[in-house]
Length: 503
Ligand code: SF4
Image 1 (tube, protein in one colour):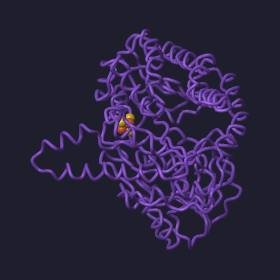
Image 2 (cartoon, protein in one colour):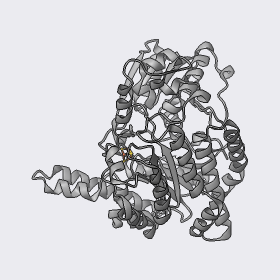
Image 3 (cartoon, helix red, strand yellow):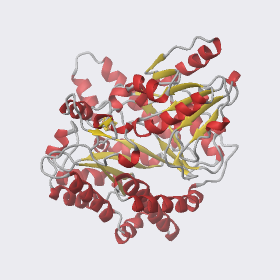
Image 4 (cartoon, helix red, strand yellow):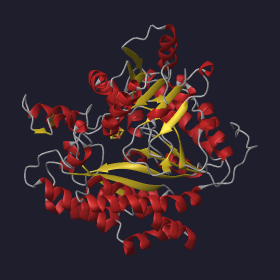
């Protein structure tokens, strides 16, 4: 019995930007008695069902965007005689659909870290159950990724997770529901040992792929301090202290190790935290800005963010403390008007944001927005190619709408076209060149421009363009750029690198 673990994707580029961490974690969760799992990341190359033999196990992890591709792999693997097991966020939300469309023998809901070995044991024993509840495993039970199985020269950045879960409850996001609102932190040693393993292999760019790297805000501490019972305060203080300990350890790694992560904007109030990030060489963070108006923030339950000039100032604080911001903005909120697009582009410039993404509000399953949107269609949602719009991920990709949420004053086309214009403005060559000053030497300025362009091509053009010629040009361009860019990111392997010690 061989174990395949597959990350489905409709597009394969030969080289990928970030390692899909879950593949290597599930490999780590596979008991050694079954041999090394065969990892197939379709962002590199398509899965070949002809390699599967009767009796093999094919594990497929799906989120909503790649579910349809995952289902076709499931069917092909089952036809080849494999036992097919699905996991991932989408399987957690729609186990029945996964069983029907992907012909899954079994579906794992929740975290696979602990339950995966039980699934494999049940397959061997002939007692496989149709469904397994992996639940939310605690931070100390997160499995170490098997980075020894990483193919050479295929990924630009590695990814390590330090915490799962987010205490917020944004309406467009499913993380707080699927990963929970109580942050589950890994031990500092577990995180650092993975990073050291990756640095030994020559990875010097590492994404700390967390839901929210800043799980305890100063406000949370203030609120807990007001309670008579101080238990929660002590828990939060301990969590905060562990974050600092982690960053202290990262600061002791070779100086050319560079990290990126994802945090909430409240971190800008906590300059002690930002300074620790700088010392740890956490050079940048994705910050969910989402909307630039108070009305917009209220609509998405994110009124802990600021708006207007105060917002620009807060974002500038990150940069002042050495943390670059990849700002994420959402368009298509009910309160958005044509002027919102310009105001957003202007704010991104004013705030000195280094990278930005501008996405259109999309109802993703598991979110509050989705529930409301699905309800609004009642029992008779519009059909596309025989698929209800409320199951949009099952619509063939070329027929899938680019935008789903009705807007009170703008048409879908207007929202899409205006979104595209903001991308064009933020990533126009003169503007990017000006921004590249931040990168320093000429070589790095050129790299900055290429990365900006690549980001734009991979995201904006393939994501929101309706014109298929434009999409295919973007994909070709991205393919061409990935190889030379990958060389820029490679570091010198340090096989004898030791674990940095605690103070
Ligand atoms: S969008 Fe970010 S801050 Fe909001 S719930 Fe999701 S992970 Fe948390």
